[in-house]
Image (tube, rainbow, N blue to C red):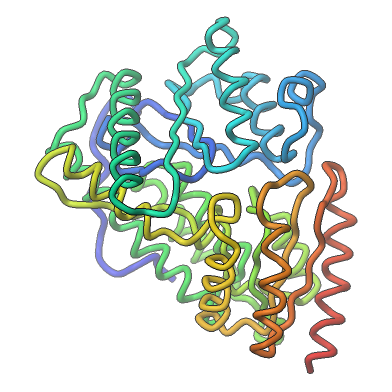
Length: 367
C-alpha cells in the first residue's frame, strides 16, 4: 500500500535540522509552524506509566495523560525543543501551561512556553480572536527559530503539508474498508503529528506496507470518549476480535493535520485558518453535547460501525457528559454504545478488560 498517488514536495535540503517546537493539545495549525521554520512535534503522553510526585503535586487534580506530558517535560525528555506551545483545548492542558510558564520563568525549562487559546464556535468575533491568536503564535515561533512568517513561507509550508491530508484520507478509506487495522491508523496519525511532512509521508507509507489488514471477522466499532495518546487500547481490542473503524478524538480522525490555506498575506492566512478551525469536528471539552452527538451519528454512518465504544479517564473534562445523549440517539437508530467511565490513573488495564467484556456482550445481544 502507499499513502496516496503522486509525489510530495521534496524535503528542503539543509545541513541543520529545523528547530522542533513542542505542541501540547491539538489546536495549532501546522502550516504556521512550518512557515516559521519549525517542525511541530505533538507531545501525547501515554495510557500507562508512573507519574512523578513533583508532576502530580504541581498539576493537581487533572487528567493523568496531561500529568504524564508534564512529567516528560520535567524529566528533560523534551530538552531538545526550541519552544513549547500549549493549547487551551482542555482544563488539564491549561493547568499544564500555567505550571510550565512558572517553571520557565524560574529557568527550570530551557525553552520558552506560549499559550494558544482558540475557542470553537466560529462567528465574526470568535474568528477575529482566533486569527489574532495565530498571529501571536507565528510571532512566538519566529522568535524561537529566527525565521519570519510571510506569504512565501506560508505558501511553501502549504505545499509541504498538504500531501498529508491526502495520505491520511487514504488511511481513513482503508480502515473503513477493513483493509487497515485501527491501531495502524492511529500510528499513522501519530507520525503525522510528530514529524516533518516529508518524514511523516515516508512513515505512513512504511506503516501501510508493514501493517496487516484487520481480519474481516472482527466486530467493527467506532471509538468515542477520551483521546488516545497511544495504541494501547486499540491493540487490546483488536486482540479480542474488536476492530476500530474510526474515532472522534483529536489523536485520530479529528486531528488537525494536512489542512492548509492559500493567501496573499499572513493576515489573510490567519483569518482563513481561523475559519477552517471553526469547521473542525466538535471536541468533547469545548463543544455542546448536541454537536458531539450529531457528529457521532454521522461518523457511525460513514464508517459502518456495528456499535460505539467509549473509554473515559477520570478528570478528563467533557467526554463523560456526552454519553447519555449519545447513547439515547444511537439507540434510536438501532446502534449500541458500550462504555467505561472515570478510569483511574492506574486503572487502564482493568478498564480495558471491562470494556472488552461489555463490547462482546453488546455485540452478542445485537446479533
